[in-house]
Each structure stands twice: as structure tokens, then as C-alpha cells.
Image 1 (cartoon, rainbow, N blue to C red):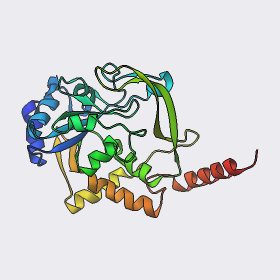
Image 2 (cartoon, rainbow, N blue to C red):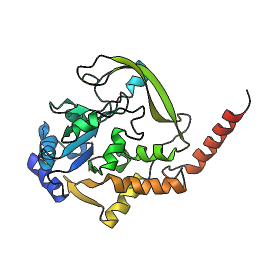
Image 3 (tube, one colour):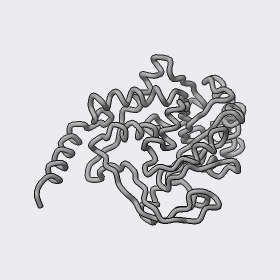
Image 4 (tube, helix red, strand yellow):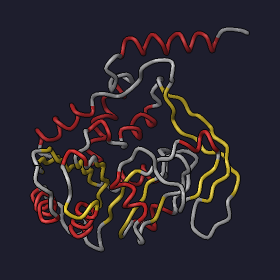
Length: 271
């Protein structure tokens, strides 16, 4: 596989219709594209150039280790499992990170200051950074990542209060902005039950439906699919499906439905 260049990345972003002033949430898995000519900058530089100073580039920078350690520093705690592009966005000199020690995002550009100022108990609750992203209809960019990596689906799950997740409270000490002192606090996230296999698996179908209606666009880079589309349209489909069936996203809905019914009965039983 030949080395991928900045020019190739810039061309595919242009073909997908990214323009100056766009606000983009990127989920990336860069390994399938092969060796880049200039490391992660091969992807980040064209993306920042495409949206320009009036646009915004955002990536998830989750740190679930906080649940175990109870310690977090917005500047020094790296994201885990989010990929090299997300880390490059977090470490960029102009980057700002949102104020949640478990499920943060890092942003560069026009809306970075606004997103980094939001502080809510849950990263997906009303008024949160993820809530703001979808309200502003950020475009979702899948750069080698599968639709199952779209973190906005968790916003729909929390909105619907799906029964296979629950609100987990985590206590710890966190520095949430540069220059601030670390402080103790409590934060929450909508956790899944670990006793059963619960992983949403129908985001691919949502993207296929959106591509068919023209709400999303798709192209190829080094033979790898790349997608761009509306976060609001993506969440609207999931919101509607979960309103009709809260288990809709799952590949094993009947198994999980039975598990949740048993869980509810056991919680309601007298001690």
C-alpha cells in the first residue's frame, strides 16, 4: 500500500463536501489507511484547513480510568482507546477539553471555548457538551472508523433512559481546566450492565438509511470508506426507534429484555 498524503486526505474531505465554517465531530481509525507521509498530521492538517478558523474539529477523549483511580488532570490525563487522531487533537496547542473527567471531548476552533465551558454531572445530560454538539448539528466524520464508534448514539440512549444502562456515580479529584486547582467532586455516566453482552449494533443501519436519503455522504480513501453526515439526523432516527422500542439498538434484544426484567424484579424484592 502506497503512503497516504495530505493531498489525498484533503481531496476526499472536499469530495465529501466539508467546507469552511463546518463543525465536525471526528471518529478515526487510521491504521487501515496505511503509512501516512507525515504521521497523524497527514490527517489533522487537511481537516483543520477544510473547516478553517470559523469551523470546529472535535474528537472524543474518554478516560474511563478515572472510575478506578479517582484522579484526573485535564492537561495531563491522556485519552485511552480513542485513537491517535483524537490524541493529536487533545494535544494541539489550540485545543480545549470539556469539563468531564470520564467522557470528555477535545475541540479546536470557533466553538472550542464554548464547549469547554460546559459542566454537567453527566457528559450526555441536558446542557452537556454532547447535547450541544447535536443541537448545533455538528457533522460526524467517520475516518476509517465504523458507525458503531459514533459516540452520539449514547446521547440517544441516555435521552431514552434505556433499561440496559444505569446512571453510575463516580467520586474523585479532578482538575477540569488549566490553571484551576484540583477539586473533589461527583460525576456520572450512563453505564451498561456488565453481567450480559450489551453492545449497540445497528448504527450501521442508521448510516445506511441516511446515505440512502442523501443526509450523509460517503467516499473512499485508499479503498477505505469515509463518511460525513448530520449528527442531528443520526440521533433523530435513533431517538424515534428507541421511543418505540428501547432495546432497538441491540443485536440480542430479547435476551437483554429478559435480563432487565429479572434485574427489575430482584431490585423490587423485599430484603
